Structure formats: C-alpha cells, structure tokens
Length: 210
Image (tube, rainbow, N blue to C red; front, side, top):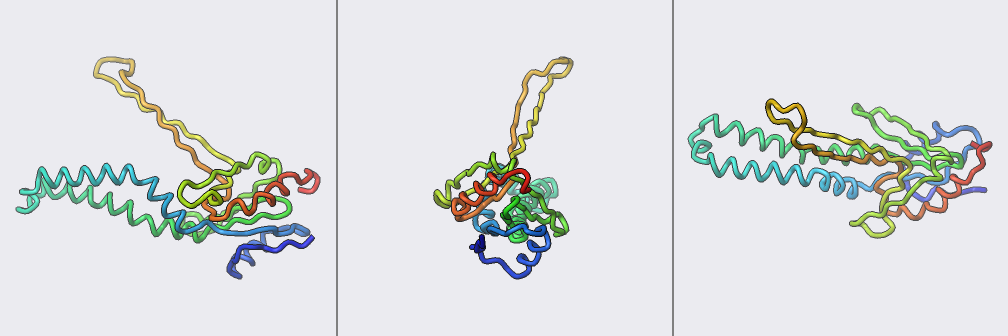
C-alpha cells in the first residue's frame, strides 16, 4: 500500500532517510521539531537559573555600584562573571535552534528513526522497533495547543543526592534529592497527533516483519 509523506522535507533529508531504510522498508512519515517549540522549551529550562543570575547581578551592582563606577576590580569582577554566565545562557538559544533544525524524525513500516546531530554536527541515528513503540506515550504541549507535543518512546530518570554535613559530625544534617527526566522520541511536533494511527500501525507489526 502506498503512503504519502505528509511533511515537507528538503531533498537532502529525503536522500539521508532513503540511505538508512532497508530493502522493502516503506517510509510512512517524516518530520522535524518545531523551531519555536524548541526555543520555548529551552527558555523554560533555563528560566529559573537565569532569574537567579539576574537577581544576583542586580544585587552585586546595587551593593558595589560605587566601586564599579570608580573601576575597582573587586566590584567589577563579580558583576562581570555573573553577566558572562547570564549572556552565555542566552547565547545558547541559537545553538538549540540549530540542533532542532539538524534533527529529523522518520516513521517506516518497521520502526521509528531519530536523526540527531552530535557536537560537531555528525548525525547519529537511533531506531525504535515495534516492541518499544507499543509503550509510546503522547505528552501534549501546554503552550502550543492540544495537537502539539511529544511522542515519548523512552525516558531516563537521573537522581542526584546532595548531602550537607556539619564539621565534626559524620552523619549528614540535611539531604536534598533532585530528579531529572530525559525524554527520547519524536519531540516538539506542532501536529503530533496526526501520526498517532501510524505509530499504532508500526507498533502492531508482527515481530517477524521487523
């Protein structure tokens, strides 16, 4: 059965996907992350840290403004470092948009493929097969409407435990636990629900067709 790829892709991406597909493997759909969604997601991620850095910068300038005006290094260096860190977070926005633009998703009759760039731009391909796609979950976006969001095929949870000790006491007096979740799959799609039936179709493929 012939299937039309609904998302418009460049010829370069079409050729790259075609090289990855095996014989008799049919391309059902292909698409890329939405650049605006990628930007908003990064801004939401850095917002707490950026707010803390901005507050610290304002306080340092307020307390040491006289020293800054007179060129005292003891006042200039802390303010300068905070400003560099804050601008560094903002300057990573183009990097996130570049990464999203270099990412591509493809759904074939046998699997889901995720093309992502590494640090120097070389593409890394991850495949998710029907057994994994059976556990796929749609997580809608809060900002871009009910049809936008992520198809999550796998998630990884990391737990960081920070213990605080008082001098001379071997047992911690306080313990903080921070959990981080990394999502893997087709992320940041504007019309993610449009491929729900296709993901279900691939997930229900017989194992001997993989």
